[in-house]
Length: 194
Image (cartoon, rainbow, N blue to C red; front, side, top):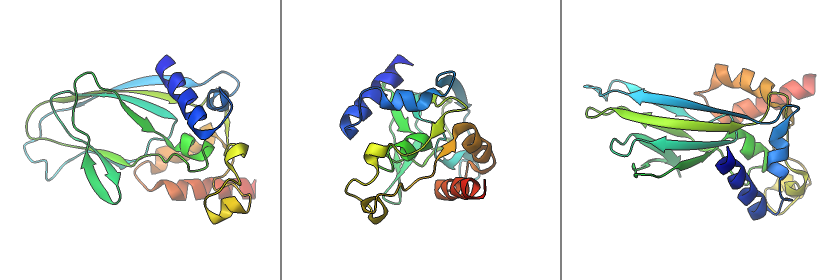
């Protein structure tokens, strides 16, 4: 949790946001949430027939991943191509989730990633998720709206909607393995009809 918060502080510094802004944005009424998931991917004799974990972005904030240091499988989508994230002993893979994409008004993007099955070796991973509190209201940081960038931003408009994290999660669980952009649009529509 402390490492995630230190990373949030570094992101604030890089973005020119006041110190603690991102941590505060995640707080809600009871503070951020932090959880860990352990995953095991056993050897698969026919990896061409079985997905390990389908392509998706993570819904939350910062994800810290300790991946297996022997067995590969993690890939991320970069410029339309799947790129291997090689296993490295004692390394932590840091992933940005959808909520940081929204708060940073797209300056940081959540990363589409997947895990392939392998015919050899048991792959283990431990992912720790630092997410907003359920009732945290998520929206682009005002300091990042209207800065040089996309045409909407030059017009002083946020690219992303304002929503409650729990509402986003309720949508995410039904559409995790789909593109994130329709989820953002659905949140815009939900706000417009509310």
